Image 1 (cartoon, rainbow, N blue to C red):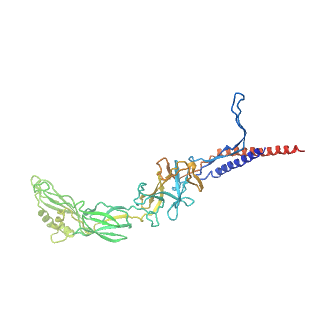
Image 2 (cartoon, rainbow, N blue to C red):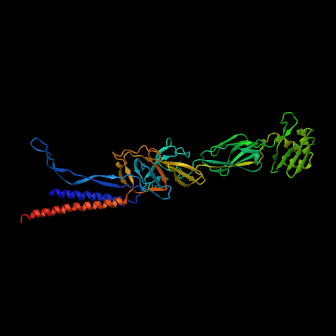
Image 3 (cartoon, rainbow, N blue to C red):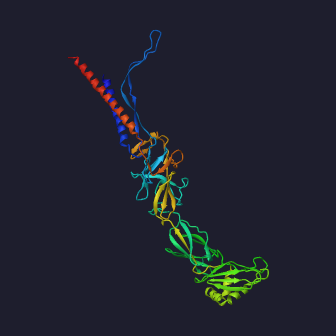
Length: 490
């Protein structure tokens, strides 16, 4: 009779543990990343009253006679299935669609978690709600792209340069030409690189004779000079080339067809001190005399031709014709200067537009590291944390790593949504990129909710309650039987 007491006690105790598991599941029904558990029972030891007997010629066989000694908990298993995703609208709330785990921790202590409610702390670490840092790859080369095969693996800090701010690391340059006579020179290919200065640069012609440009930063002051055709290199700016005469001034070239009789030229833009002259050379056909006319700032030179329409005017003829036209001469003098202004002007044309003119300039805007503050963060499905900066640039700052644990049910729950490795779980190292190895992808703006099924939990609660009640009846009934036994003495 005493055995039934202890069977009842074992039933009460173990059903109470099952109720504790159910209660914990229900309590965490709204806990992000929570994984529910279940309790399974098994029979305890049995007492053998009579052993089994094998059949013989004289007697038949006999089965063993045993009485069970109650029950016990066989296992409390975790349900590691995927929970539903809930939209939050927060870009740093991350959910995993797959079997992987976020790796979080401090120092040399690593844990696994499915709770992806992350934030950035005052030192720009990516952390969980409990202050644990998030593991991943960092843009250690500061080139705006994270390469897991090259970059450092560790706890993510978004301050790549360690200067106490999250800013872009890629310089950008947009050449813009402004000012007079833009055809006198052009800005060649510009190469910029991560620098320390954000500035508005002015590249201005200061000596038309030598074609020298001065490079000046609005914030940085004069940084140096460069001549036409040379390459300028500066550690705060980058490299560029100033090309003279692109497009070239109209060239007055003798005999483009090789017979020495043609002067072929195109429209000219020329002027010093802001005085622009448009010179146009015209072949009007056979038997024409050389002539000059002026209209506004336009000088038209009608070239002399023979009866076949071939140009008969020489270079000197054109110079003399301009000098002999008072209005044209005055315009050329005002622009070109000198005792023979027409000759000086045409000589310059013949140089193929070597230019430039003093005062011509270009502007170049560079956005250097530290110059563009972070406006927003987004996370892609492959775990890339992408910074959106105030100058419109986007750069990959870091990438979240996932741990793929061989036996997730073997993990030890540590509280705070964290799991630790156990001898049966296996390790999630080395980490893998989201979207590879079956770890799953990352959904930004979502949290994985608890996988607790309330319908099942309430059903299990009823079954567990009834089991507890039934085991209590074992004790009360056994007690009544014991009382009847004691009453036999009376």
